[in-house]
Image (cartoon, rainbow, N blue to C red; front, side):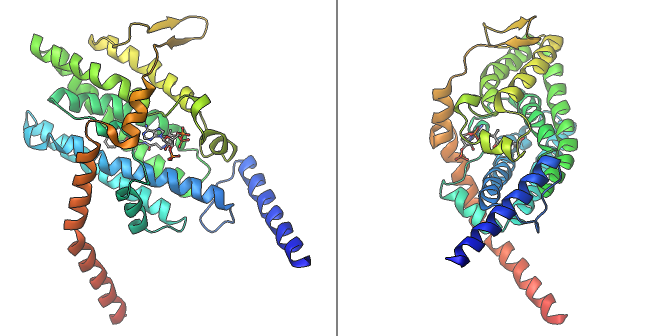
Length: 318
Ligand code: BYC
């Protein structure tokens, strides 16, 4: 009985110290004591974030061989490599919480871990590559700038570096769209069509409305999230609508209207049935994305084995 009381007391002390640290705005580092629920929450979010970066390479990779110029191809290749790098920083950050890369990949392949809904849409034309850079990376930046101040040190530091690269990604996407809007009628229509198809899925990247978001309350309490899903979505809309106007694109939302009193744009309803359909595995490309990831992961087994054999050999030499 006394032992149970002592353990409870130790747990309460741990929680108190942890909460004090969070409230002071101190970063939590891998060797710090932390509640198990905080650790699990972070593993879920960071690993899903890493999976998104890596799966996100597929829709863009679709256009490497068809980029319209050598310059466009070089830029696209560099961008996709950056996304792979982001995945690696994030898997490493998650590993500091006591999960291995293998376990994270298994959770992805078994359908237990998610990745961003946006990457289950196809990239049908070159303008889609512009729209992915401008809208998808643009949405990702808004979210990730906020995550630079997240409470877990390794996640926050990964975000600082990722944000620098993402701002280049966003600009290159906007450049593609701007150029197409100065082109022929067909090119302008292609850019508008990409905008029409990718606008709403980009708004869904921020997750469900705050009232429907089961994870937000813990995430805000532990300062993993600094802003809610709706706050970040609004920020993205406010800045992107103006960018669309500058290059002559129309936002495909008839209810979009500047609200002077709020100082924000009001927007039309988001199709949450579509969101949950895609998140639950039934979007246009879910099967294709997972099949590809599983196949390439299996084909790469020899690389992992060779790296492990080399590590062991070096260990024996030392
Ligand atoms: N897609 O309670 P909620 C990139 C899930 S990649 C799928 O609001 P939370 C790029 C959510 O996980 C950048 N699932 O959750 C790469 C939860 O399910 P579980 C990607 C979604 O975590 C290559 C449930 O719905 N960025 O930029 O508080 C090329 C309830 O949601 C989505 C990140 O990953 C969604 N859109 O908030 C180009 C950012 N939304 O886990 C570009 C990091 C929600 O309970 N993540 N769900 O089964 C976050 O900031 C947060 O996790 C979210 C969701 C805002 C996404």
